[in-house]
Amino acid sequence: MTENIRSFLDAISESADIEIVDPITIADRRGSLVVRSKSSAGDLAIKIGIPPDANSHPSTPDAFLLVKRESEVLRLINHLKTTYLVASGVIDRLSISFLITKWTDGVPLLRNFRQCKKAGGDAKHLLDEGIRDLLAALEQLHRAGWCHGDIQPDHIISAADHRGAFLLDYALAHGKRTPTEITYKGGLVHFNAPEICRSLISGQNAYPTILTDLYSLGGVIFLAATEHVYPAYADDPKKLPWNVLVQTIADQRFNDLEEARNHVSFGAFRLMKACLDNDPTVRPSSAKRAAEILNEG
Image 1 (cartoon, rainbow, N blue to C red):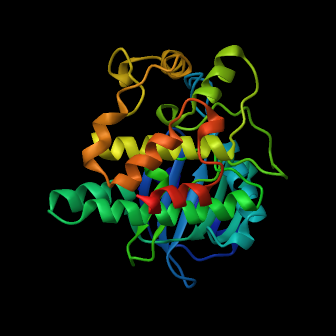
Image 2 (image 1 turned 60 degrees about the vertical axis):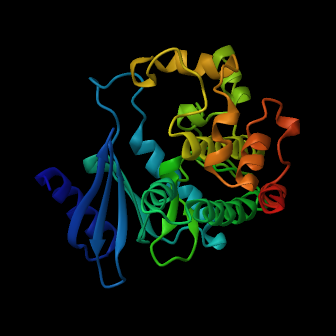
């Protein structure tokens, strides 16, 4: 752990009046740090946001703003008990924002699915159970008037204690009382709905909805089944600029859904097809309806 991170943690400990013990850096990317730490209150997850500097690429997200915004969202949805916010704040002298939540052990649902499949287990059942848990969490979130805005594989976690799957990262969530305003550019691009991408291409404001959240879930199921994303890019997406990726989705150039048929349960396949419909009005109208489609399979 660098001295820089240690100085951040010392300042956060003082600001939040929380003892931080044996911190371990879990992620360090694009101005956002995630640290796991022990404390008298149990294990904690500490997220730190640093603003992009003058030399950063224009596409670099403002992690300072996103972490600040996520802490505001978590306070507004804390009654849903989706994530247990312990403390948050801004430390002006270090130009960082932070939030602290209780740590929950787990691994991304897709990684769990792949490991189970490799080991010869009932991976289809495991995936269905994870999707079912996720839809229950989404239904609760949506009924409270919020949309997640960034459903993607790394944000769907299977709890290590087998207490289901849960969602991470609410920085892009939108609701009735949306906090710090941001220019929403979708979540992870491969899982953006076509209507989001069309808005982005035309320069109009884009906003996540129940239907775009469910579209993203369909994209996650497709990836689980096929090991590649749904949009049919002309080249390796890592080599393509963001605007080309967005245009591909806006133009509705996609891979064949039938690729996924034999690799997930029939219910998950039907749900995936319904969620990935290009016409938002044809998609499941709610996470509850999506769960019914999964169970009907």
